[in-house]
Length: 276
Image 1 (tube, rainbow, N blue to C red):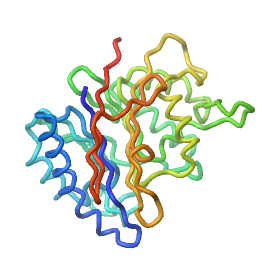
Image 2: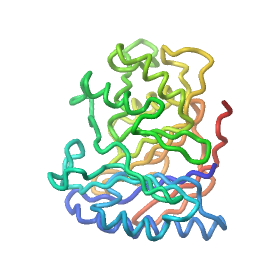
Image 3: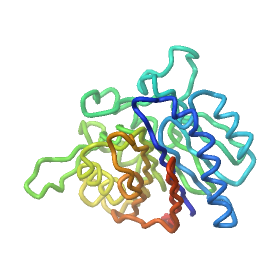
């Protein structure tokens, strides 16, 4: 499967820059199509892709009936990702565009960091990832789920001497989490801006895509991890390898092609889907 990840330039001092993300996304995908001679099968865009429903309408008009799936977030950067805008109340947060689907998935991010994670919020994420849950969709035969930004902290790193231990936060939800993620072929992790402590993030990603350092049942197929983040150009260095990651069986998949401009980075990965 051809998978593309897209990262945008973000400006914490001028958040209106996100109003350009839809135009940049369309430009990037069309450039990719021009290079490859076809559209990618899956495009994951980093956070804040659509400020409001207008952006979704534009994407739907451009790609709605094409053989492509775009996974995007609708959120104004002035709003809290955990609560979103006060109106409209039914405003979703994560949308799938393309292949005639136009669906809305789980409407809200449950937690953003270790500082606001809780047993109840972890349970909400796990409940939505199990088969037939609201955080799942399919691309042909591939089952896809998602963790929004800091929800990757459903996993925690242990302070063992080898610094390799990764566990599911709140042991009561561990078994259902294993059942959920091992029934997925791909797990998406779009981020608003690049997370700090990249070394810890990478350990969690490795565990999520391989299962080798989790207390997990053996013989299970673990999902391909696909993550992408925006960069705050005032404070963060633009680096494709630090912003975007596709990992299979605990190993990074190198991008086949990278399109990089002042405003965005689009990387294309060729990923062999796991056999079940």
